[in-house]
Length: 412
Image 1 (cartoon, rainbow, N blue to C red):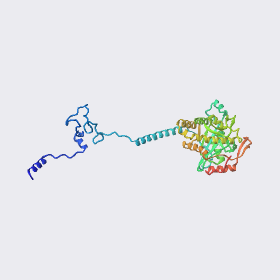
Image 2: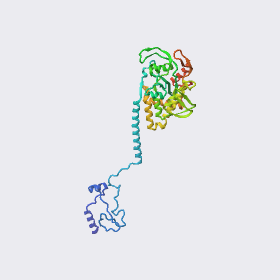
Image 3: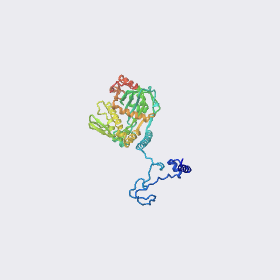
């Protein structure tokens, strides 16, 4: 090799080796945590090596790379970036919050409603019960209880001030695999009241024949339930009763019930005075409507048909979206209904909901019937004019309900 090459090679070998290229993170560590600053190239009009004066505008023509632009972001070595929530996450968190709120409200409403249920009837005291049937049977009773009414209320509502308590209406609501059936039992039905022990006298009374509403007057809900089971063979699963005041308050909390009447109704005894056609009835008017019977050709039987029609309409309206989705309307309805509704001790809120929906279902393909009648003006020796059942047809109907079979008997 010539001298020039040897001399060049010796100088190259004498120089210290260049360090390997460092990554931005390692470079920052090597400079004490501060990343090395990129070389700034002078812009147009700037003398190389000139230090920019603070506050002085860059020379004309300056631009990116001239050392005066804003610092770059997002590059290696920059500080932590602020996270931005995506629209999908925002919607997800909002939905989760809504679910939590609805869950809290639902649980609170359940315990509030459950605390208002009046579980006062003990069906375990009923003697000699028939075996459990198929489906579910609710005994729904409208009593002439004047609990919560003042003397002025009794006069206004035409209820009178009679002492004691009787049944104004009785219905067996059956629900099962063959649909829903609401069967009314005339309060003047001439039946056998089985042997019982008096609630006040504690004496034992032998079985006797009387009108059906006598059972409630003598032994309350338990004896009424036993009398109905004894004469029908239908096992009663649950009991529900509402008095005059509760009925009026419930209707008023709904804002009235819309009823369509085929003919005008006028009855001084109940205070009913309605024109034919569709109209909204308030609580007082509704009570008068379901109690009136003197204008009906078949008296008590006609009244029972009106009661069935009214209860189904009331349940249908209470389940409408305008009620269920409006808390300012729903809570007063629940409160009014539960404050005065008396049920058996095993009736849960879920059972009440099932009963309510079954009542609503009567207008949607269910059956509204009356126990088959043999003689609507049967004269008795001790109770006067009564209603006698057609036991041949009635027995068939009772067996169909007890066994949850398709109803073939059209009672009237």
